Length: 128
Image (cartoon, rainbow, N blue to C red; front, side, top):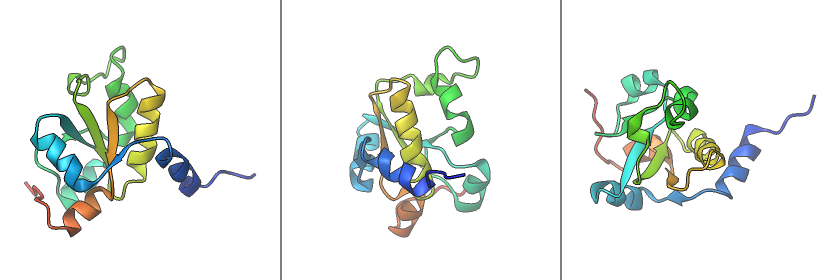
């Protein structure tokens, strides 16, 4: 069986989505124009920390939480603000942004480099 490698899927998604620099993403959130959406697994949050005030929507529930007709819908995701998704290294977030675009979202982007880059550059991390 031949499959399309995930690296190829990520590259294809990145050609079709908006990727924001970490500085631009942080400025948009600080200015009230965007919401950080952390799609990492809960164990990653416990192990690595999180961005303060980021909304946590695990990757496995994202579509269900985003869809207003889903019994699992989360009102925080029904906003005019830009939803800036991030994961550990910006692979899952690229695929997730593409999926939300396929669902009709127009106010969605990913943060380049993900949480690993966020930590590496010394940006604030909440470990509580």
